[in-house]
Image 1: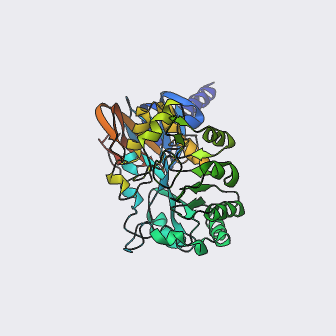
Image 2 (image 1 turned 180 degrees about the vertical axis):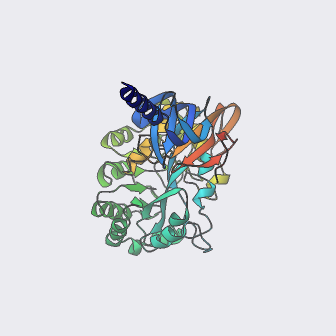
Image 3 (image 1 turned 135 degrees about the vertical axis):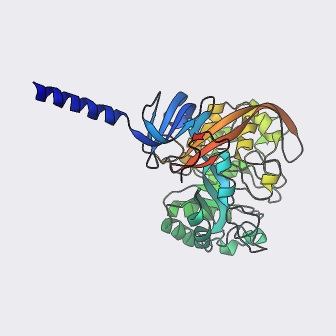
Length: 412
C-alpha cells in the first residue's frame, strides 16, 4: 500500500513539474492580434528556444524574462516588403551599395519590424555582395526582390535594357532561393513592356515566384489596365499603388474620384496592391477616395531610404497609422503588415504566432493625442491615435524595449 502511495505522489510531482514549464520569455496580458490564426483577444504568449511555444489565456510557468503587456497589443513581428538596405560607400550608386540605402537593424526593431524585403536594390551581378555585407550581418531577417537589371538600382543605369537578363536573374534566384523571394522592375522610363516581360519570365523560370512592379515614368504613361490584365500574373505585386506622379497612370480617376473599374477586376484576378510609400509615391488624393470605397492595400510597406524616412513617410508605424486614420480597422492594418505580405512573398511560415513558428513578436501601443499626418504634397489630416512600438522580439530574443517592460530588462 505504501509503495502505491509513493508511486502516486511521484506521478503527481512529475505532472506538476511538467505543467510548470520554464520559458525563455512570457508575454503576459496583452491583446493578441494574429490574423492568420484568427486571434483577436487578451492572451499570453510563451516563447522557448527561439520559437512560439504557446498562445493561450493565463499561461502558467516560469520564464527567464516576463513582459507585462497589459493594455498593449501583441502581434507577429511586422514585415516590410518594400525597403532599401543595400547601403554602401559608392557615391554614384544610389540604392545599390550606395548612400541612399539604410542598414536594417537601425530602423526595424524600434518599429516592431522583424523582416524586411529589399525591393530590387541588387541585381544578379551584385546580389552576392549585398548578401555578404548586409543580409549575413543583420539581426533583422533580410530577404530580397532581385532587380531585373543585373547591376541593381543605380539610377540612370536602370534604363539599360541590355542588362535585363532573364536567365541569369533566374539562376541567381534559384541559387539563393532562401533569400530571393521574387523580382523587381523599377524606374524604367521607356515606352515598352520588355522590363516587365523579362521579369515575369524570370519569375516563371525561377519557380513561379512573384514580380513587384514600380511602374517607371514613361511619357505617355503605359496603361496599367494592360499591365494588370496582359503582362502580370495572379500573385504579382503592384507597389506604389497610391502614387500620383507624372509618368504613371493612377488607380483613382481624378474626375470621378472613384477607383477605376479595371483596378477592382485586377484585384479579383489576384494582383496584389502594395503601399510602397517612399518619398513621393503616396498621395492622399489617391488614398482618401480609394478608402472611401473600401479599397485598402493588400500590404503596407515603407519604401524606406534616406529620403523617405525624413520626409512624410517616416517609418512603418507612421505608415500604418495613416491607414488607421483613413478608416482601416486595426486587425486589417496588422494583417496587411504581417500575414498578407508573408503570403505575397510565399513565406507563410512568417507573419504569425503559430506554435513552432520563429518567435518574431511586436508589442505595440496606441498613443492617444493630437497628431498631424501629411503626404509629400503637403496635404495634412489629423488623427487622435498613433501606433508606437514598446518591445520587439526577434528569433526569441528581446532586441528592443522602449520603456523597460521586460523583467529583468536585459539578460547577458
